[in-house]
Length: 253
Image 1 (tube, rainbow, N blue to C red):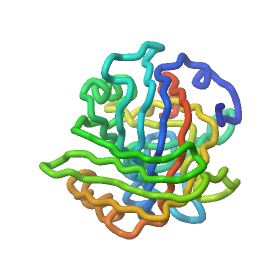
Image 2: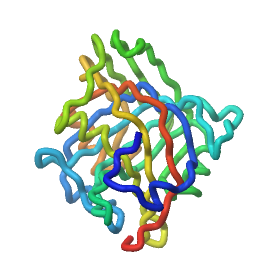
Image 3: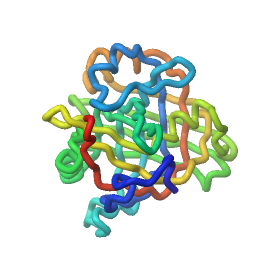
Image 4: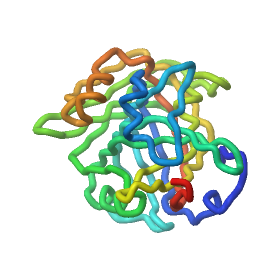
């Protein structure tokens, strides 16, 4: 399940969260590296694909969620929307490719509070809803995620057709989906690294998509401007069971 070039104490840390991530809509925008540089956690550097640096707006379903092995009543199935970008770190065991979150949105305040406390991630809680009609991975369908922020509903929607496709080595879809580490800057300037484990996902290239939201109000002018432009690509990923391990502070971060 894990995509790592070696096993170390971070990779063996206890499991914090188990769940399934399902029906991921991934809208990918090209952004100037200067916009991302202030958000790069210490000890990491920007990752790029074919000379491009990306931000991705991702909506998906959390299903069968368990924290420390225990399902929390009313918090096992919920939606999430996040804006993320991509970094890498040269660890003693080899290169690690990871993600950094600009902001993560969930519908339950308890989920947001725990994530802020454990990982120092920038979570907020707002009302959310979803409408997903994807089939079993062979028939395509539609996935739509909506959130209420600033007095208005926003939404991210994509459709696809036919069966999902295995990832092609070196492809843009592989770059977007195959980052198995998370990095979070802490208030004291240090960096927490945590591992995310899942098998490779099948993906569809979206046949249609729509982002209807005030992204400047949600993410600031610099990211809102990037998201208002036509995206470089939009994918739907099937998803899978996932494991998130407890984080550890980087010695050089």
